[in-house]
Amino acid sequence: MTDYVLTVNCPTTRGIVATIANYLADNGCNITDSSQFDDLATGQFFMRVSFNSETGSDLATLQKGFEPVAAEFKMDWGMRDATDKMKVLLMVSNFGHCLNDLLYRWRIGALPIEIVGVVSNHMTYQKVVVNNDIPFHHIKVTKANKPEAEARLMEVVEESGAELVVLARYMQILSDQLCQKMSGKIINIHHSFLPSFKGANPYKQAYERGVKLIGATSHYVTADLDEGPIIEQETVRITHAQSPEDYVSLGRDVEALVLARAIHAHVQHRTFINGNKTVVFPASPGGYTSERMG
Image (cartoon, rainbow, N blue to C red):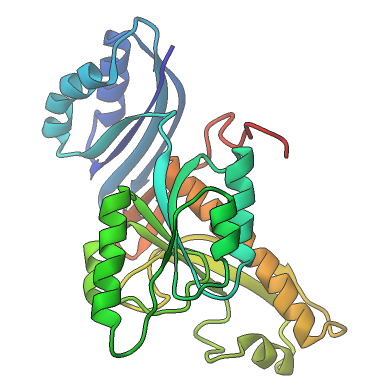
């Protein structure tokens, strides 16, 4: 049997769930997992359904047959083969903790993605990337050449077929035009001190203020720096005995974990942008299974 995922976002109204369930049943499909959310504040309905075809119906046939249902309820929808791996382009500068964590999760199958390339404005991680048989693209960025650099980046995105761009501690600000063009397709990670502690050394500022919690936030990139719809967050407790260096080390661990969780949610089609917020459904049973243990 083939496993599929259906995602739906539409104006809320009576009968959506029943209609979807009946359509799948009538076409020989069995629902294995389902999540839904009705946002009363915005009048929007969100749903994610995992199902399999017990009669051999192929994806194209199921998609075609669902079109009248989608039109009736004015749905923004997608129906996909659950085993298809999303093509992801990673971007990094000189901090490699997130990159190395993602590469490891990718190698063992804990992160079900196809990494189609790594872009960096430095050469620091070229060898690491190439040793994993992944294309490495060095795109130097300066104030003078930023438009040309972003044009080259878009060439890499288009040539590689990347469906998602991940800023794995990429320390360059993307232009408004690029953010708008790739809306909903770029994920970033940052420490959770913003906007309280800005600048080059936020962990030192946090230490000097006696902060007791540090953390990280992963979000979709928008033209508003570090203020896009939040996908995932996590924190870790700090005591008076920790040094500023401890803050940095603990912060890096949290950043890597949160970014991986956000990517996992996106590539499994569990995230929906809902205005300035997101709807993030839990993973289906077996959604965290690794192909290998190491």
